[in-house]
Amino acid sequence: MSRLVARLGRASYLADRAFERATGGRARLHAMWFYSQPVPAARPAGDAAGPAARRGGAAAQASSPVVVRRVGAGEVDEAKFQRPSGVVAARFQAGSECVAALRDGELLGYAWLEFAAVDELLVRAVFEPAPRGRVAWDYDVWIAPKYRLGRVFSRLWEEAHALLRLRGVEATVSWIAMRNEASIRSHERMGARRVGWAAFLLLGPLQLTLASVRPFVHVALPGRPPVRLRVRGCGASR
Image 1 (cartoon, one colour):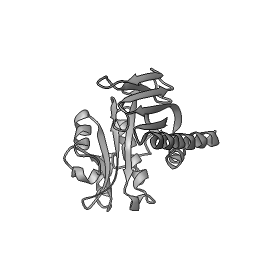
Image 2 (image 1 turned 180 degrees about the horizontal axis):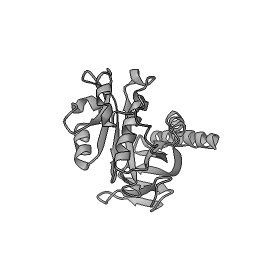
Image 3 (image 1 turned 30 degrees about the vertical axis):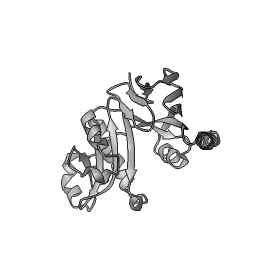
Image 4 (image 1 turned 90 degrees about the horizontal axis):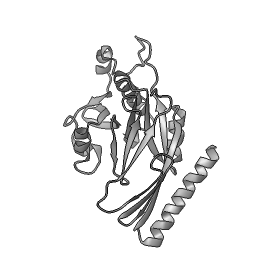
């Protein structure tokens, strides 16, 4: 199965490049897997490796040079997120929550969580985690290059999982580009499972969507609403 996944990833990449070259960039193909990752149970009380979201560990966290915590709107300069202007503010306004790793004002990494629906920027789509209240969408997980070999990634997820447990969330869902083998392997090592797929063919102002979830086939015309895909998390109760 892993070989098939890798082959599909390479095929999607080659197809995208072919479309782009043949049309001068007017046509693109974005193919992605949907993955679901269970939220692990809390560590036993007193475990020094536990996340800062156990508020009783705040004193221990304060002595660390790296602080990992939930941040609110305006707490971190938007420019440090390295995203288009207005994107971060719009995420907070829409209700997304951000877990960030900080040290002396430097933003080392972050992860975003959404509990309702996410407006995707790469394609014209709205991704909705299901069932609502039991599954959240995780997206735009980013670590500064010089910290990618350290514990920032794992600490971000420890904090995110603690926040999710507080809200009764049992699993998260997200998408990964089929060609991104490194991210696929990383997610699978963390226990994530594939729960679906979608492919978006952009032809100028038109977008054709093929997906393993409803509505399965969709054509987005100019001025019409984007496709809405409801992705169910694995292991979450109804």
